[in-house]
Image 1: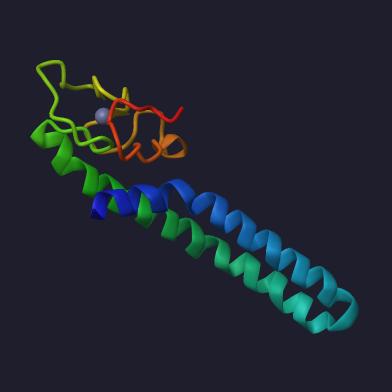
Image 2: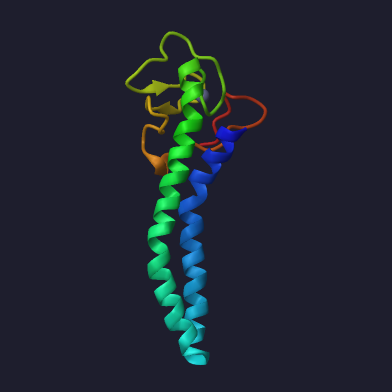
Length: 129
Ligand SMILES: [Zn+2]
């Protein structure tokens, strides 16, 4: 439960922050004509919130890795929860059922941008891609 929450949060965090900044840009653009002080304040706020946004993304990544590691240690795929056979070994843990790949620290093999999508509810062998 917690692992799937963090995986979904991690998968969507970058896009969410991007669209928040895009929306703030639209507000600030209108503000340049109506209330210039608002636009100036938003530019300063955007600059100073960039570091906390990156740190929050790192925190979400760390929590996601932390939530994935117990599954990897138990020999279960964090994505589809299938018990793996003897092929489940480092350096890259590759699931025989959904072909997701995991590093020993809990990261997806292809980095944070490649966080696998949630599996289909019916069958773990149903790959959405
Ligand atoms: Zn799997």
